[in-house]
Amino acid sequence: MTSSHFAEEAPVRRVALFGGTHGNELSGVFLVKHWQQEGEPEIRRPGLQTKPFMANPRAVEKCCRYIDCDLNRVFEKENLGKPLAENTPYEVQRAQEINSIFGPKGSRDAYDLIFDLHNTTANMGSTLILESSRDDFTIQMCSYIKIFPPQGALAPEVCPVFLIEHPHLKYATTRSVAKHPVGVEVGPQPHGVLRADILEKMRKIVRHGLDFIRMFNAGQAFPPCTIEAYKIVEKVDYPRGKNNEITALIHPDLQDQDWRPLHPGDPIFLTMEGEAILYEGETTVYPAFVNEAAYYEKQQAFVKTVKEALSARGIRVSQN
Amino acid sequence: MTSSHFAEEAPVRRVALFGGTHGNELSGVFLVKHWQQEGEPEIRRPGLQTKPFMANPRAVEKCCRYIDCDLNRVFEKENLGKPLAENTPYEVQRAQEINSIFGPKGSRDAYDLIFDLHNTTANMGSTLILESSRDDFTIQMCSYIKIFPPQGALAPEVCPVFLIEHPHLKYATTRSVAKHPVGVEVGPQPHGVLRADILEKMRKIVRHGLDFIRMFNAGQAFPPCTIEAYKIVEKVDYPRGKNNEITALIHPDLQDQDWRPLHPGDPIFLTMEGEAILYEGETTVYPAFVNEAAYYEKQQAFVKTVKEALSARGIRVSQN
Image (tube, rainbow over all chains, first blue to last red; front, side, top):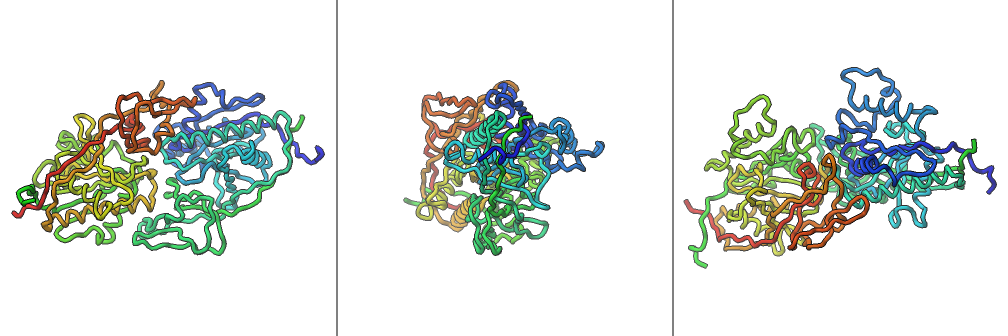
C-alpha cells in the first residue's frame, strides 16, 4: 500500500482519563485517585499529556450516580451555554466547568481524546463505546485493542465495541467534549463495589489505548481496518403495571447474556407467576445493558443492538 | 422419645415479612409490594396472620440504603424511647413507628416472628441470620429449611446459618422488635437490581419458613436438633492510607469465596502494585460479607466467622 492511501490526522497530544462521571462506578474512581496520587507512571507516554480527572466529585463523595441529574446526559450545547442560576442542577454547572477545562466541545481547542471509565452491573465484559462511525482514529484504536497483541488486550476475552450513533437514542456524554470520545464500560460489577478482576480489565484497556496513541504520534501508519460493532437500535422497558411499578423481571435465560444472540420467540421477562414473556421481534438482535441497575429509572431493561461491520480508513499522523 | 423431652412454646400466630429495611435491596422490596397487591396467597397459612411490610419506604422510593442513618442499626432501647425532635434522623422516627406496630421490643405484645429480607453483593448464597443461640424456635426452623424436603429447601445449595451473637459486634436490627428475629440474606445481587434467580431463592426460604410455623402451630413436635452455624468473631477493614482512602482491594482468591475456609497465609487483599496481603491469623476462619457494597463506609471488607454446632431442644406448641 502506498502512502497515499492513508488519511493524515493531527497528533493526539492531550488525553484525559475520566473517572467518577458516575460516582458509584468505582473502578474508574479508584484508578483516577491512584493515578493522581502516584504521579501517573502507568499512564505516562512520551509525546503525550495525560490527565486523570474526577468528573463528578460530589457524587463520588456520596458514592451515588449523581446529585441532581445524570452528568453523562447533559452535554448538549444548550446546557453548556446556559447562564447559571441558583436552581441550575449541580451536574449542569459541572458540565460547564468540564467543558471549559477540556473543551469547548466541537472547537479546535478541545482535548484530543477522553477515556471515560464506567462500570455496569450487566455482564458486558470489557466494552468500548463509540459515538461515531466516521471517527477513523477511535475505530483504529479499538481495532488495535481488540487484536493486538496476538489475540487482543483482554485475550481470551474479546472487547465488544458498542456504537451509540442513532438519531434519537444517542445521548450527550461527558466525554463528548473531546474530539475523540471513548467510553470504557466494564462489568459485571455492583455499583459501590471494587472488584480486582474488573479493575485489571479496565487498566489493560487504558494501557493499550495509550500505547496505540503513542505509536500513532510516533509515526506508525495503520492500514484500513474493519471491526465488528454492535449498533444500538432500540431500548426495551420492563413490563409495568399501575403506578409504573415493574411487573416482571429479566428472564433467567436472558440474564447475563449480553452480546449473545436473542432470537424471535426467546424468553426475555418472567412474571411473578412464573410466566415467560417472549421476544416478539422478527430478527435476531444482540442485547446489552441487560439488568443495569441505573437504568431502572430510565425505563430500560436492556437495549437491542445489531451487528455491523465498522470500517476505518488507513491513518497516519500528519507531519505539520 | 417421650413428650417430656419437648419444651413447650407458645404458638407463633403473628408473623411479619419485612422488605426494604434497606431501600436498594430489591428482592424483598419487590416481594413485599407483590404480596401487598396480590392479597398474599403465597404467604397465607391457616392459623397464622402474615403481614408484608415495607420497612423504609422513603429509602425504597429513592432506591438507596437509608435516608439519614442505617435503619438496621438503630433498634436499641435508647433510640426507641427517645423523644422525637426536629433533628431526629428519619430512621429513628421510623424505628419508633415500627416498634409501636410490631413491638414493643422485648414485651409480651411484640410480634412473634419477623422475616427481614435482605440482599448482599457478597456471594453468600441463601443465608439465614440468627441473633441468639438460645432461641430454640428459630434454630428448629433453620434446621427444617436446611434439611427438608430431603436435601433442604434450596437443594442442591445449602442455607448457611450466620449467628451474629457477640458482646460488641451484634447490632440492633429492625427485626429485633419481634420475639423471634430471622434475617434472610440472599446474594450475590447488586443493590438496585432484581435478579430472578435470587428472588426465587428468597421466596423459597419464606415459603418453607411459613410451612414450618404452620406445622408447629398445628401440633407437630420437633425433636432436638443440631445445625452447623457460622458465628461472627471479628470484622476486618480494608488497608487504608491518607484521608482514610482504601489502598488495596479484596484479593481475587478471596472474592466470591464466602463461607469457604480461609487459612493462615492465604491472600486477602491485593494492592495496586499487584502485591498480595496475606491473612496473618493463627486459625482457619470462614469469611462472610466479602466485598459487600454497603460496608465500605462501615470500614468492613469482610467478617471472620467460626464454625459452631448450634443445638436446640425439642419443641412443640403449648396447649394453653
